[in-house]
Length: 399
Ligand SMILES: [Zn+2]
Image 1: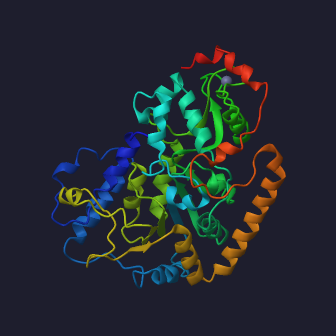
Image 2: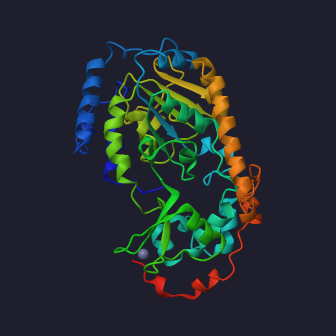
Image 3: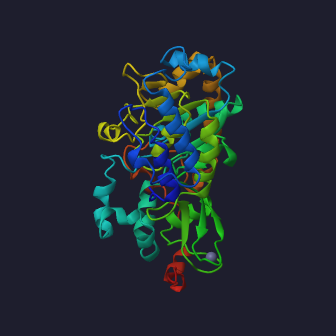
């Protein structure tokens, strides 16, 4: 969602430790700067030394979910990193903004945007925040109920295996599922908190505060300084959180197993994370379709260490194709965690139901997974009186 910046380019640079033996290093001197230099050298060395001689050490005894589960139960697997995207939240009824078919971009016509993407651009938002908040109201989930997949990640944490979960999602479901801030890198930000855009103020606001503004159709303005308040999601034109780049440096050096779920790995620099792991680290993809494989053109250029599930050179990548919840259940079963996972989901879901039952009067009535984006429109909390704030013009001085 955000633009590529310098550190992002470092991620790309790390991809260049390619497994394509026909590439040479002629074009690679340009980007080996700063912290990516070590990655670059390490990758270059491992490639040069490994050329046509020995394959990287094979860590999995077979390239299947069973092989992964046996590895996970061995002493060698201590640090698991998860990379997750929209696909892990779709079964919670949260639409994937980018998927064709959600009708998102078709619905934007009524907002008089200069072009559809403007709605997520920070500069446009500062001038014209209304379309974004109207869309947020339209797409606001009727309920925040994490999926089996989210709770599987929580189990990884409870078993002491989770080093970090890198998420592209802004829906806060990882937090609702019980992951702590230290477990998470919310690479595209989160709706969980919001901040005043006034540069000398920056007051923080909660999700409840923001929700109330969104549903009362009041453009959220700071109580203190009347500047615009923006959810902490990363807009186009904004950098990814610094935490993404700092933790990426350390996490991806010590990861023993990478689990990629529900993402098509299309958005940089997030997508380049898969190629940052050590060459022996197994990578498990749980997704509806295969993704992250080498782009033939990029391979020709010697620029990619995409995943390899099927070639005769495949040695560490496993694809489990299907819904994320089913993949996690299958893996939990092999690990002997299936009952525990099911109990956890049952317990947590009934707690959420009980809570939203109590809050039902306030308009947070439980809704089934939404077939259309308009389902949540049926329960806007009534906020008579607060619309007077809309008349205030003081907040228009946004930098
Ligand atoms: Zn403020």
